[in-house]
Length: 319
Image 1 (tube, rainbow, N blue to C red):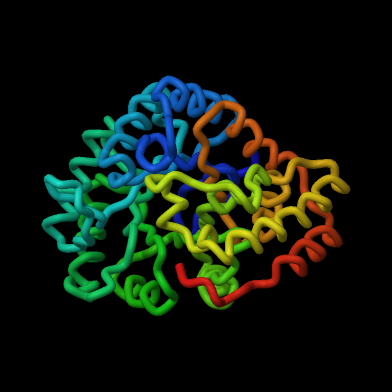
Image 2: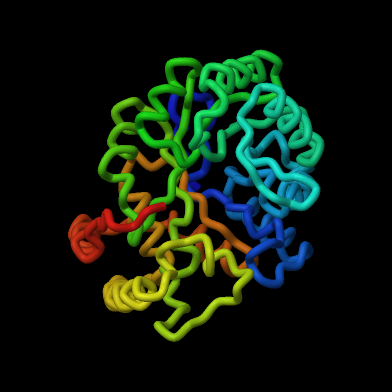
């Protein structure tokens, strides 16, 4: 599988990454560990080398499952995890970017992942209240690089302003942001800034948590504990139905191209060379196979432009 360099780092991830949120088995319906393990094994077989997780995914469960699955191929894969979202005994989540908390977090992640180092360590969310000086957070991350616990520093969900502040303290190599045909807000600032700064850009939610697979209709309903019911504006009533109609139009284009809808959506992202690796979540072997197949062909310029016109960015969504 094609690889692209992640910013100024020495990491060359596969253009299709494996998103391990569902491995946490929290918010994604019924997920069996055996099935997830099979999906990870298939990803490795298909040349996927980039695996993205976070401690908060299943409160440590995703990291544990991923670490066990990748143990035998640790030197051949890139493990990306995150920091900053912590939870208490009641599983209430809060943001803590203090140096002391980061040091605890990285050690906990190393233990769960059963590894001596983390390839890409990302601040999961910026501190909205500025409780901790950014200098403290990123100075400690620099120290973790020097200690050999992490290889590179990345950020997730940062604005350009926040990214610039972080860069003044530490060598940031990547930005991870929500980016798909239905959520293109990063094209206004974060994506062009990343390209100009030669930062790796990592889209997450490339299939809009399933919307861009075409498996939902306007009457689809989700359980209250499904992440899509409370965590994604694309699924709000009044917006969801319109998004489904757009996806139905894309289905027609996908049929004319002769490729599955999900592959068209991922391929559209990969057309942009500023995109380093696309984090495609998967729960099953079949989903991994579909995601990986998107790297084996390329959209024509005409198809890319037609799809782009159909999904003009809408800045009304707030992530």
